[in-house]
Image 1 (cartoon, rainbow, N blue to C red):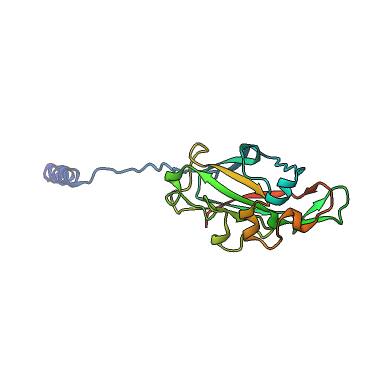
Image 2: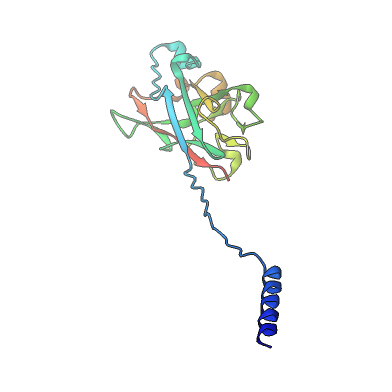
Length: 204
């Protein structure tokens, strides 16, 4: 009887082992990606623009844009971006006598950039269009100097390369403003200055 019991136990054990499931185990591998946004604006040239008015022709007709009055800047950005530009002061202010002022609308500008990217990577309201300098920071996307197009503006400085072409009181500028020619304004002799800010921000 003992032998039969032993035999039955062995058979049951063997059957149990035949139907048992394999042992499973699991390993966990955490993966993380840390992104640090890159937003860099660099003024390559023309960081100091100086107009010198010393002839009657310049008083009457202003100073036209030239390579001497250009500001070139680049943007390197890992995200879509916008650039705004505005003057620090409501007027240009005399350095010899700060009670002397010159209206900002004596200064006009246009933007140039790689044409194939305009309307594809960014919208530029002043691209090839004369615009008057003002002191109002952007309050809406239409006011941006450069507005990046969603999912296309991000890129290296070789892609985002811009030039501002400045001009002073030309007849075209006078036609857009309210101040008239430099001659008609009868401005006192002085060096009139203000700072112009280029503000780079992540696109919205």
